[in-house]
Image (cartoon, rainbow, N blue to C red):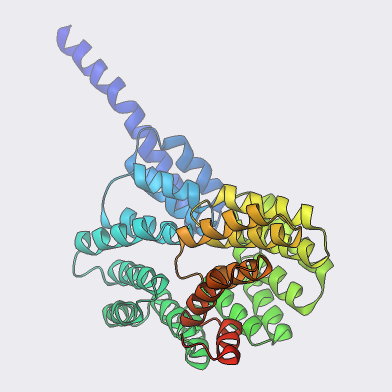
Length: 369
């Protein structure tokens, strides 16, 4: 009788674990068939009992561009190379650069030498963190290490493109993004980055067609819908831009760039109160991102509220001391206040960081920077 009770207790203890594994297997099968919502349902039902379910749920949510929640589940799963690699990607998407660098380094150390795809993705993410710091030497070093690890890594080709674009080599960037699409025609980042470069080149029709092509692959990609809205905004089609951007924040209430672009539209329309509301929202969802504070400063300056403008510019620089536009805007503010020494210092700082208008001002005034 005692043995029977022991066996019954063991079976009862194992039942939830067996059930969780069964749900995980069903989730994997659903994901293989492209039934992502069903896969998510199965993974969510098993996360309390399965580390594997947490990691798989995190990777699935990353695919759906829910990076904040994806980070939560990936961090709460095991600390293996798979979880760490995808956690680093999510942290980079959320502009949490220091965390992304640390996690990517841990992922590289944890990855077996034969796992070329994972190692390449982790190396590419590490490269991206150096690119953010404008350390292009280390950025390219790690990006090319990623390509040596796996020449067919679309992520590595994408990161090379981002680095080249940041260095001002737009043609090289376009080649890298196209190479990423050649490797993986379904790669959302490559569609997004290529569309963004075309926007910077004022080739808005080509940008729109590129982004719409990506949306045929992943029609709910908020990243692509956002960039499409930005392209419409630059093209002057504000109604289409607002439609895209508002759909982005309905789908992802933490999409900081969409709030900033909505704020830009209202700013250009002279509706500074609405612009401020959007920029404030951007700083709330991404307090570690300097752009929202800088744009908030600009809107307050337009309203004549110089003290609030000053505080927000200073906050932007506190977060990112290489934000040339923030220094330039500060120079404009000090110019209005007739504080010539501070005006000069900020013009020189902005010019040294590459701000073209600040450089023109310095040349006109005969100021070395």
